[in-house]
Image (cartoon, rainbow, N blue to C red; front, side, top):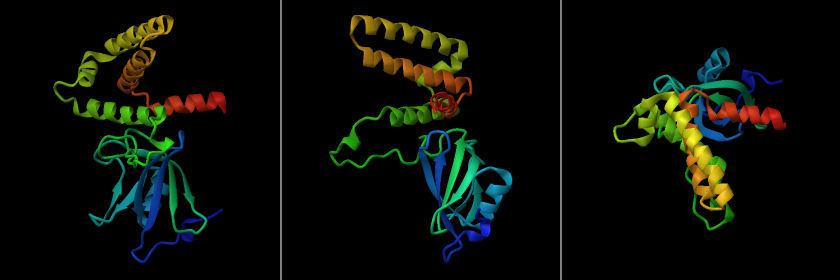
Length: 206
């Protein structure tokens, strides 16, 4: 068992921190922490970091509300890097993306192919941002303005469209995409995070 004294900080008194979703394993962000940030993280259970640009301690979600509950802090084998395993409440990235690592470098490999999990994570972040900002002219914002009942109705309608598409062997991918989008809106409206759904699935199929 290691302790806070085992952390090897650099000459500036900082240690790099990789933040990971504890339920899905997705890497959410990269930042730095000083000893005070690490101690605050351990004491409060909320992710704290150190901003090199502002030169100050900061708590994730202090202004945005997109907090991170830290379930575990791990130290790497060399003692000079940390892993925060967290349960996020909202997107990690300031752009509204679920993860800061949403940009794929193009290389012509199979890794460039669309990935459903990555796409849903991106879409969930966008929907969350629309819910917070409620921009005029946004269809997503319109759904939120009409409430959970309307969003639930849309999920039901889209589910029927998926069934019809499956039976007719036509536009199944398109109708499934519509269903997943409206389902994510309903989850956001009801305050149920995708990480909570992932946790349930993980527990069922562990």
